[in-house]
Image (cartoon, rainbow, N blue to C red; front, top):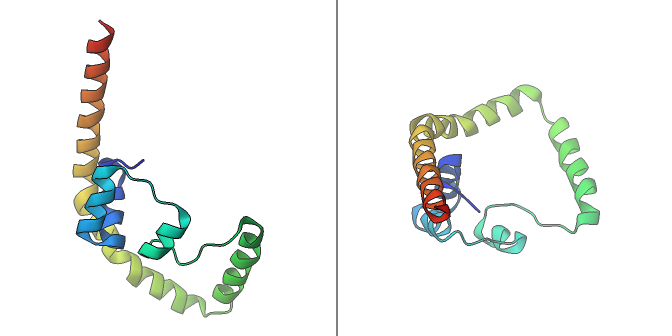
Length: 112
């Protein structure tokens, strides 16, 4: 289950777009591996017995590439993610804290 403050509100919108991201965040709807692939959240879905072989294949492909090129590509890819996290994560954490406090308050009222 996702909570707004753990950064998933940022990731869901980036991966799925604002409307679909909002849907999964607000509904709490779980998705299985096949649905995650269909939505573009993951690139591949494999049976468990094929995972390590595929992971090693990907690792060998990455290791064959020039290290500086990989670092540059990764830096370019994550820069906007870092910016979004810096801009939005604090607010999301505050919202999650507010929700947790409200839940604790409701639980305490129910126990009295």
